[in-house]
Image (cartoon, rainbow, N blue to C red; front, side, top):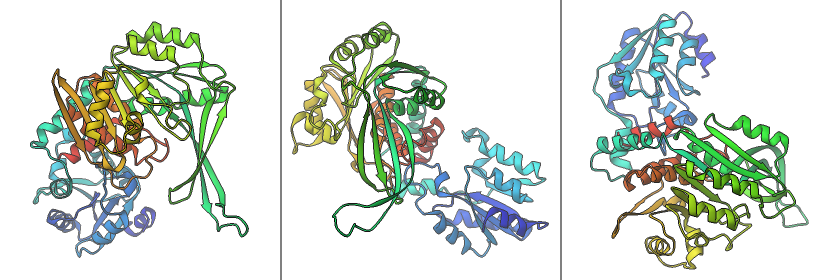
Amino acid sequence: MTINQLAKKLKKKKFSLVHGVFDIIHIGHKKHFDIARSYTGFLVVSITSDRYVRKGPNRPMFSEDYRAEMISSFENVDAVVINDDVTSINLINKVKPNFYFKGNDYKNFKNDITNNIQKEINAVERNNGKIIFTDDVQFSSSKIINTNLTQLNVRNNQKFKDKCIKALDDIKNLKVCIIGEMIFDKYVYCSELEKPSKEMIQAVERKNEKLYFGGSFAIAKNISEFCKSVDLFIGGNFKREIIKKLNDNKNQNINLKIFKNNFNTITKTRFINFSGRKLFEIYERDGKDRKFDSKLFEQSIKKQIKNYDLVILSDFGHNFINKNLSNIVQKDAKFLSINTQTNSDNRGFNLITKYSRANNIVIDQPEIRLALSDREKSISLLSKELMKKINTKNLMVTMGKDGIHLVSKIKKNKIAELQLPAFEKKPLDTMGAGDAVFGICSLLSAAKVDPETTIFVSNIFGSIATKILGHENYIKKIEVTKSIQYMLK
């Protein structure tokens, strides 16, 4: 049943409305429904659709259809609707409930960082309805999930939650510089056809396509809500319309420093079927020069670099970071965070070991193995070995579905070593997740946030990134804050 169909059905009918996710059903829900129905004799339950559930990784555990079917089986529920929106405001305006019910834990608006509860109440009252906070037995689906189904090992959830929220506050005044090339990520959506009768090749039918701004631009977007300002230094063969689109897509506190020359910009075109599986990839180069060479760019970096609390060097291995630029950044940055990436264009030729100094390093598991020419040793041993080769205090290794490993020098002869499994078990798109982790880990390390908090918040960042298709959206502070609150409930 759609919201419009429901609105017609309820016209001139007295009814109660309850809205929520209802992922893990418990006795508290039944009691809540009983009370709500008792006011009018007719109860409508609206369920947040899957794509708008913002309760941390792996939520919802059950799809919207399963949740709707489960709620429909309750004798005290007369109608169920899936609400495809982040709040119930539009639903309230259309169906106009006589009574709108929330649990007593929502009564304190200070705990609602989104301010959505107040907006929903305003909508109810505008439509001549009344808000009721039920005072029945209180349970929490999130707490049940966290207690029984997650692998977190936190002694005091409230204390650790406060530390994580404080960490986001600690990084808000950082002035950040990002140096790294732009990558244009084109997603071509297609349907797979049968194999051609005479050739063993893949045949597809092109449907539509979308161009995303990736590389260093995506890193800047994902951290832009978390720090004071981000200056993004990029260069290449950018056409006027691309520069306009970059400016249109940047956030308010991102300052673009664009140096236009003949350096070839990279477009990676990925062909994707409608189940989200990537079929193949094409590299395209737009520009004459295979190496970035700009004295003006280097002079500008050298002149400004000491003004930043944090310099993020994102080396994608397409010859944007030359030797002179590398030396300037390693010598003059107050706090330097580096990531080098291995891809199909540079495998074996863009190793982290070409750098001699960094305050923080983030690389993935294949890259650390390539850098140290070792397939067998544990990530723990490899991390410590690499930290001896490069003068760094923090080393984070991203390991895909296996999570994140962090080694951090706390004191001269003391290190902290931590590992967390990947929080998100059902990723939509893993492209850019490592870059997202790199960005937030850089901020937290620059603010001297403790290793436990750093790895936990970084893992949340990565999990949120895997739910974003391409670079369709960016990570928002409110999403991270809500994930922290729900995961540590």
